[in-house]
Length: 352
Image (cartoon, rainbow, N blue to C red; front, top):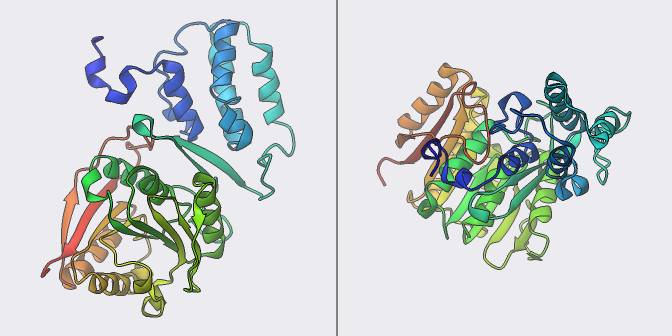
C-alpha cells in the first residue's frame, strides 16, 4: 500500500486518476471541487489527452444523455488553461469539443427538447451500476426547486450506504423526492420491498417518472387504481411507485392502500416554515399507519438555524424522539461539505 492510501476511501485505492476524475465529471461536480489526483500535475501528451476526453466529454453515457453544455465547456476550459500553463500542445479534439460547446443551441440535450434540462450520472460504489438523472441546473425552474439534486440528497445517499440494514428489504416512502436520486439509489442497491416516491409539483413528477423509467428500463408496469399514483413498476425485486402527495390533503391520499411504511426518508424539505403544519400532519398520519413503528430519516441543509430549530421543536412537542446522526464524508456523491452545513436526523415516536 502506498503511503497516502490509508487516507483514501477503499473504493479509490485501486482506481486510476482518470477513472476518479471521470466519476466526478459525470455527476457535474463543480470544477473548483474536482479532485484531480495528480492528473494535471504533469504535461499530458496527445494520447493521454485523448483518453481523458474518452472518459469525460466523449464518454458513451454523455454521448447518449448529455451533461449541461455549460458545465462541459467549463471543464474543457479548465483543462486547456492547465495545459497552456505548462506550454503543452493541445489535442485537436480538445479544442474542437470546446468550440462546439460554445456554439448556439448546444445547451439543449441531444435527445431531449426540454429547455434547461440535462443529465447527471452517478457511478455507484462497489460496482453497483450508474444512476442517470434528467434535471435542471437552475436553482428555481418552472416555479419549483425540485428539478435538481440537492446537497442533502447526496448526503442522505452516503448515510444510506453506511446503514444498509436499516433500508434493505423495507417498505420505504420518500417525501419530496424531487428528481429521485435517493429513492432510485435505494431501489437499485437495497432491494426494498416497495418504495414510493412522492412530490406534488407536476413538472417534478414528470421528471421523476422519466428518471425511474430511465434507470429501470426493464421494469414491468403494474396496475393501480389510486388516481394519485401515476407510475407503478415491478423491477423483479422491488415495487416502485410515483405518487402525487400533497401534504395538505394527506388524509385523502389513500396512501394506506399502497404502502405501510417501515421507513420514511426525505432531503431538504424543512426550508419553509409555512409548510411545517402540513408536514407535521403528514408525519402523524404516516406514523399512525405503521402503529408508530416506522422511523423517519431526514437530511437537511441548515440554511437558517432558527427555521430548523422551529421544526425540531414542533416534532418534540408532538412526542417525536430525535437522534442526530454523524454525517458521512462526501465519498461517492460529491457535494461541497465545506460550504454546506448538512445535518441528518433519525426520528421515531417517543411513546412507541
